[in-house]
Length: 391
Image (cartoon, rainbow, N blue to C red; front, side, top):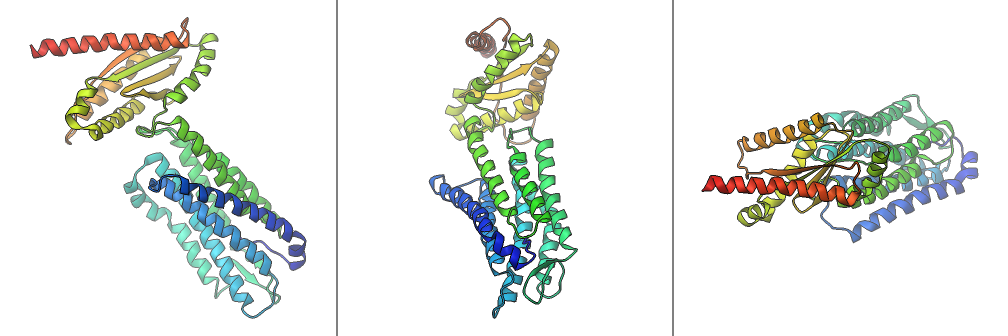
């Protein structure tokens, strides 16, 4: 939203406006340029993120142009200013709507869900876009005085309400579903939202300065940096934590163990996984790995660390896990495997061998070694039983 009161204020603050929006433009251009070095085929959430960056770049440019032309009197000045401010409101609505879509797809990874739900969620943004176009003919959100100075109308508050509503909805959605059944999300939405909230409040209260879109650019940059950090800790195939994160969090777990807290590790390995790859192909093998990852996330508690340790091995780390809790998780895994095998779709048989160890009185190396030993004891027993059944 463009907030300019009079040209005298504008002249005083124009250098600051150029610096602020220039910074936002530079940040967005840097992120968009970095995409050229990445894979061209992006998942939907990646495409949405880069579209948010493009829109933010355009908004920084438009707002700078709007400030520069405010109060100017030349042929065509008023239509240009009306068009700029109409675009500012419309693109603002589109940006926050895309933000909610981005969070939702990061959480649920479902295009079907987005098609079903987000046509309805788009209604407030669509109404504001329509009203902003009508503002070209009737003063609804803003107007221009005789000297082409920007003037707010009372209904402009509705734009702020809808904008904050979308941002808050995205934040609540991310917080409530921050650990989905089938993948992790440790995207800090606060890193994106705090700069935007602060910038918009300052610009709402103080005329003649530019804060919203540079703040948005800063928030998107912080989000981008976190996504790079996230990629280093997530397994791209299953969406689980990877070995790097697991080893990283063991420092914390070791300290908790030294304080007397019980730390339990569960290692799981897919039986006959090489045979699955050889029989059905590696693409089906990858599908099995993803399915096991989803099963483990559903079976584990919300505070558990579930990681793909490597190959077809997975590890669950639990704090303060009594024997009953571990047994409940194992039973949940068994039950979900049964549900998987009973599904109507064509399925590939899956079975898991499990090894359990306690970190107490063990160093990290022996902790993993004990899980591994226990898991292979169960695997040997399983293979022997399979052989005896065939005989």
